[in-house]
Image 1 (cartoon, rainbow, N blue to C red):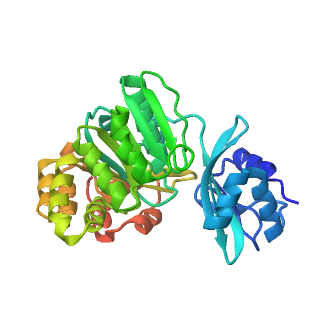
Image 2 (cartoon, rainbow, N blue to C red):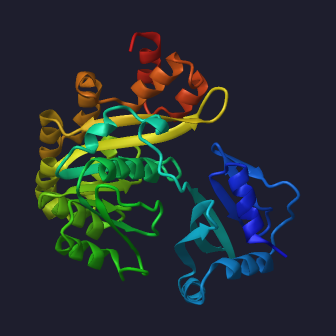
Image 3 (spheres, one colour):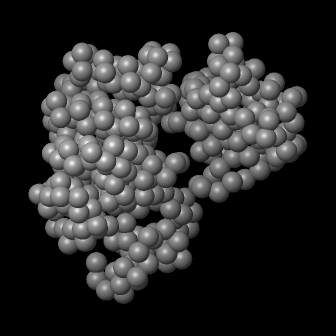
Amino acid sequence: MIDVNNLLQQTIELNASDLHLIVGSPPTIRIEGELKVLANSGILTPENILEGLKQTLTGEQFERLNVNKEIDFSLSFSEKARFRVNAYTQKGSLAVAFRSIPLIIPEIENLGLPKIVHNFTNLRQGLVLVTGPTGHGKSTTLAAILNEINKTRSCHIVTIEDPIEFLFKPIRSIISQREMRSDTHSWQVALRSVLREDPDVVLIGEMRDFETIASAITIAETGHLVFATLHTNSAAQTVDRIVDVFPEEQQSQVRLQLSSVLEAVFSQRLVSAIPKGRVVAHEIMLGTTAIKTAIREGKTHQIDSIIQTSLEVGMFTLEHSLASLVKTNKISLEIAQSWSVRPEELNRLIRGSI
């Protein structure tokens, strides 16, 4: 017998970010980035997980899981929390990953984000990307940005998500949140129709393929402010990823379009802090003239050096952020080195003055 409600309750009480249910392992949670087995829990069987899913899925969702072998959905848990859930199949058995979503949307300052992030909320048009690995706070950062717009501007904010994560309450703005399958049949249809919904700000939960990337650029080109996430590790890699999804004969045109609309790439990591917890390390690329020229001319190899020499306008490399965290004793040198993509640059910044 498995009681999913009890497991979710423990997840909340222990302030865990994730709960994993996998056949052959006990229920496992993630706290501050580390996996821990829930106390007094036994090894899960296929029957346990099937029973648990029947407690959380509707009949239509369960049918979709059987057909597609996986499903994303959101789950409200009493008045204490919401969860983003992915049920999937592995080795012929069902498994589930629950991601905890705070009910209260945090402020930008409370997330430890740099002050320049506030500037993103004042933009009227363009494309802003938040990038980084899965589970490193991209959705939370975007929620904080959108909620600041909600508090300070009179806008129509439209989000397209799979599934809906943070629930926004209108303050000065009005907000339409659309979820895949519940509110629209596909990303393509939702993105094609969004321009008919009189939006000022559009959130695309994830730019995952050619169609969503092309749509994001088009929406930004038509005078709207677009926010989206992408699973990339750096600003330069982000630009390359976007361009590379297009056929070769279209890439020069895409570089031109991207250079005209890209306002910022904010890449973030949640790294282990001293003595405990996690802190944000980040890289910021802004759409300056030099950056736009490098994108337009296909010289993305120059982006890192442009960021390194543009500290005065608010750009940071990841190494600069990690070095600052080390020098202020927020993270250890070993942690910084494990996350750095340019260790020599990190060591130079730590030895010198930042």
